[in-house]
Image (cartoon, rainbow, N blue to C red):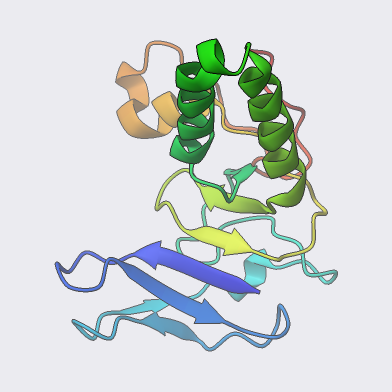
Length: 164
């Protein structure tokens, strides 16, 4: 299990912490560059090792995404599109196979809408839905949000997938 979050200092961009089990994390994340300590919200871990909230900021709204950077999939498609005329468009089929393999093999990461912390290898229950722009708008703009969705009691743990 691993947690990583961006630090406010200009040095090391990520502060990381690993632990063999959900209840074995230290009391706080410590940045090696600036010495800043962020206490962990261990009450956000369920008894089975899942998450009901962010371990870094404690906010209950999280989302699930793939650990792979989106630019990798775009690069695969662009290379296949450039090679398409010379490969009789079979490179596009190859790109689809590579993209599907990446999707199936790359693990999920649970991220926080508020602080951006990434939680890896925690139990999948309760499941958090994929990114929802309406939740992000409400959290970023507050009452000025154009399409902000009201917060569910209990956060996103076990929430249905967004409709869009």
